[in-house]
Image (cartoon, rainbow, N blue to C red; front, top):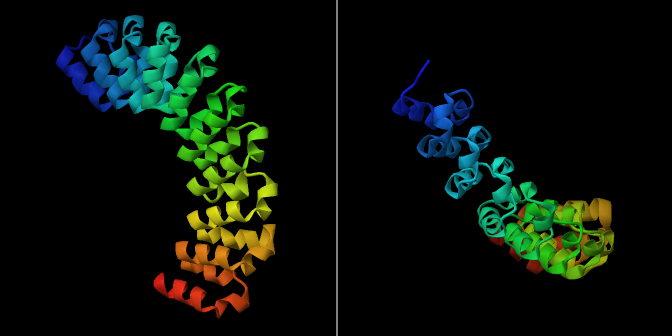
Length: 245
């Protein structure tokens, strides 16, 4: 069955993957393909090679779904200027680029600043680079899981990660920081409820530390139930609790 362009445009605007079964004549039509990838970036897979090498089309697809970069032409996947533009749009599109560019500090920095979790796709060498890892965990503390083991022992990185997401203290930060007050304080300031896990599973001393407890309560008054009984009667603790209600 033959379709006219207006009809095809209406279809792909609703169901981008329809590009996979429409006439080949439309796979090289920029209007049609742009409409399709705007609705579903993965539709880029079915576009003509000419349009998979079109910067406007590929960027549009990446904005909708970063994975779509896998279907871009090899020329674009190896073009540093375009890759910089792509990863600034969706950092995790880094997964699709060449190993050479995954080892390019400029590219990785732009990617992790857009999406910290794109650190997963950086080269082994750059996952061991402090500047890169700091930028990644500053954007998303959970990206610490993709850093090298060496980076897990770095206090600056640990602090930055827990300030962004306190739960990282329990998940990815090296255990040596469980007794580091600066790191623990930063973590409970971001998420007071982790005081429960600190008390029961890591180090009970934090339930007795007034600074840590105050920070936790100021962030979430429900953390009061995890502190030492003596501190429950402290005027500062009581005041902080009342202010949260």
